[in-house]
Image (tube, rainbow, N blue to C red):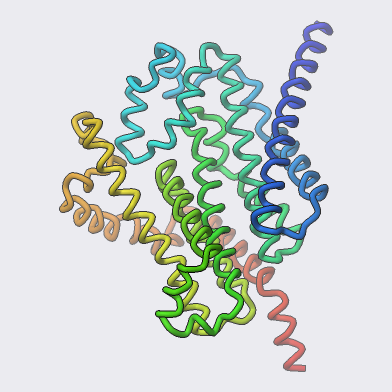
Length: 369
């Protein structure tokens, strides 16, 4: 019994050590690229310490999913499917038909990897690693926006240990989703660097001056890379694009002084990236589906299938459904059976707003005095 316990501890230690080593290599690469490309002023060692400490906490949080022996739901079909023929897997075709071709690039190696319950743990370990990288990217973004160190550390830590990420890390079929979030955050990061690279904000007063910025190599490079990353986001997991919108709003609200010209310029940059990326994404997706004849496979029962690619009138019905269903439900968020949840929600919202605007509240109080 003691030998078995020792063996288990040793095996777990080796697993954690291996993952930390991988995290260290990935972190070093990301931080080097981050410093060279974006000219970050934060020290290299501090970034490494942040990443490794958070990776340890994330590994500790998700240790049950990399130590338990199980397969869940669709994971079973990955287990029994013939290895080396990923492109014939029904899930492969389905994921492509719902507009997530890049997800298959992540999933196919995991499918080939799963041939036992032990290998399923290793596949879930990959998802945990992606979660650690997601933490790092959000942390760097918040530091860039001059959030306090403690907030920059714990906000992304709370995000990557939330309920959604618990699903991503416990279900191999959802292991690719953090990669879509990473693409989304990198996209908004480059878009913000693009905006900040233009020193003279007065140029944004006229539309023609903004268009002329496309002649700037740095502007053009960041703009194209941001679009490419946004397209990768949509091609991996479409809802991940919400991080782009969310962090764009945080960036705008975080700025202490913002004029009409600057707001118009930022709206033009963010909006054009959104529109161009979606246009290119749907055009490429439709072409691939038609060329590969995946339209013959597309089922009619699943609402996630992008039917409007083949039937434009479908989107009208979908929009009406959204307004009558999810939109009205979100408007009645407080009209739920458990009133205590409403109270908790309002308290958390109030405390969050106070923390975010604490400095402004102090300034107003001092002005009144």
